[in-house]
Amino acid sequence: MRTWTLSPDRDPMGAAIADYLAHGKASKLRVFSSQFDEDEIPVAQLFRTYEQMPDIEREALKRSCGSILDVGAGSGCHSLALQEMGHSVTAIDISPLAVEAMRKRGVKEAQCVNLFDPAFTGSFHTILLLMNGSGIVGKLAHFPAFFRRMRQLLAPSGQILMDSSDLSYLFEDEEGNLDLAPEDTYYGEVDFQMQYKQVKGDPFDWIYIDFCTLNLQAAQAGFQAEKIAEGEHFDYLARLTLK
Ligand code: SAH
Image 1 (tube, rainbow, N blue to C red):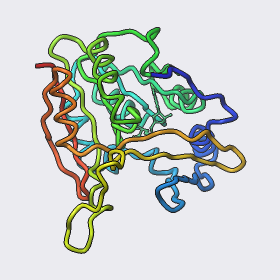
Image 2 (image 1 turned 135 degrees about the horizontal axis):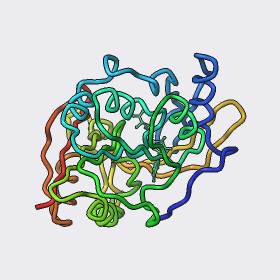
Image 3 (image 1 turned 180 degrees about the horizontal axis):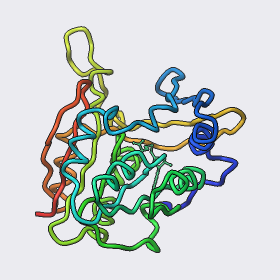
């Protein structure tokens, strides 16, 4: 797995977060993909409070315990909510601008580091990956490496709380059958590229994984997966623990 962090001039989401923090508003955070039409991430949503979070995220926070690692923490919305509940949280992100924003917002322990960088060590009771947290894994073929990394970072009897979505509804024909060719790659594998004002990021892989496939990947890596909550649009929260 690559263990890079972003350079500030190629960090559109970080630039949007920094702008919103400084001015209380931001321009469009544009999202491009070879699979989808151009889209937009509402920057205010990255600053959501506990009350504004979807149910599956609130459920993840309620179930968080012990020392917590918030992976891809963004503006720090989950880390801040957890700190307020009295938890001890380490927030990591590859975006230097997001990490700077988290520190300014009061996240006590925020580091600009890639989840897969072996120099990052620790032992956590709860590892959180939220807002389609599975995306960080990038590709289906990377799940074995992801679970090996989780073994290094999880405390004994620790848990991973991760949300994702089943994208199969995008590929259904009129009869509701999946319209996919066997030679196609896994349907949840997508690519994205973001732009904020003049700051354009590099394209990156992102994966949405259905629960059944996640369960299989987990089992092959010696983990068990449990679906603990379902969202309103094919999204769900999974809890993964070592067998
Ligand atoms: N969890 C936040 C942000 C989600 S966006 C929220 O719910 O609002 C995904 C975040 O993951 C981005 O901030 C991105 O910079 C970060 N990220 C992507 N790959 C990463 C990796 N390998 N290690 C750490 N952070 C990563």
